Image (cartoon, rainbow, N blue to C red; front, side, top):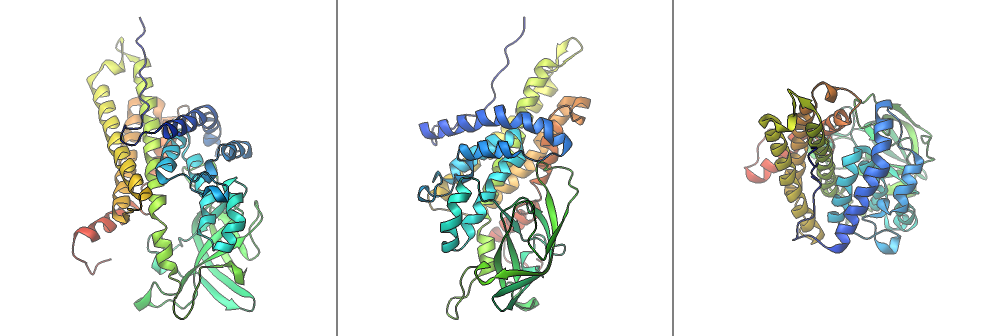
Length: 402
């Protein structure tokens, strides 16, 4: 007699549960499994692009407007709901869970530009890319060398950027550049942000891109960008600056990392959960020595450890997201969450691949996709080592070694 398969999908704890959140979670979960997972299983092995039809369905559900205020056409929800939806989407395909952030690029623009662009972004009609990292400046933002020099009517940008995902398909690219010569004694000075509006499928004049050959994070392309006298009109400068109130471009970039790190934790948890759920099903179906491998203690204990690690990170994510929504944001706790979830995701997806044996090392199962993408969560939005530095700097006296 066949044994019934269990349902390992998480429920929102009572402390955070509302009917609206349960409905949001169920909507995102159904969409992810019915619409996203089949597309991911088909296109990821071929390094295909997220289809426009899928993006339109996401737009219809409001997924691009989760954090955008209702008066701007968005859903006006909080970081908690953002994390809920992200986890569900990442359980199917991390790239789809990531593309919803591209509407958020518009939220960092000046008020006059936001008024025009945010309603379009909420509908998924304006999506942006972000160019900050450079060949010689990854986690060390203050070391960027890309220059923006003042000219009549605007600015010209020269330099190189790395790891700019979605640069080709975006409607605009936010570029972090230096408006004053690099000064080792004042490395944070002169860092500003610029918006380059462009046509999707093209690069703006003076900008070219070379696609990076990635091992994962498929569904869209990531670029190395070269800027050669790329002109930005006067209104392309983001932020204000007067003699009394200088724009702190570096500070604005750094402060903008809190929600993305919670988002990355949600992606990490979604990936790990996908690997866990697939493993639970697999070990109950796969037989060796006349028994399902779920009967063997080694497999059972692996499943128990995987589930426990995921649940711990999810509990921390719910708590920190709630704090942010209540106006009690903590950069260091967000760093702790991002660090813990990313490290957990790599371990859990690796264990899932081991449980699948040789089958896990093929593209016939999505386990290898979860594994590849989980490895990236330890790198982007601040590496695990940068998270450890941020955390330790709050717990220990300053050190001269940076």
